[in-house]
Image 1 (cartoon, helix red, strand yellow):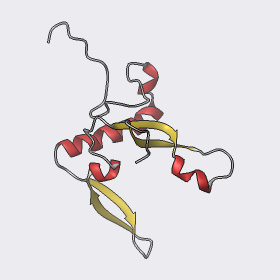
Image 2: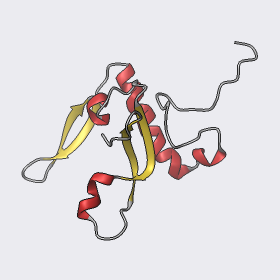
Image 3: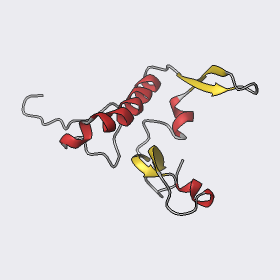
Length: 116
């Protein structure tokens, strides 16, 4: 539509601590964690599962499939989904002495902040 302002964003990332209007959100390190989230959301939109790499009992890499909903722990188009980039994963708190390191992505519920 003429005159409509469209804010910069990536597919499926409606709520996050990353502000795509800011130039810093498009740096290499930031994009390397944001783009896979958008790609996984797009795959779900197209009803395509993600390829999931895992180790078997013999420590050999196996390829499997996983839906984006199972990966995120919530439907990727849910308005209750919050992407917290480069944040601490609080469930690991009990395993760490001192400060928790940050991870690329933590998915949370917007309604209560619960880690998914």
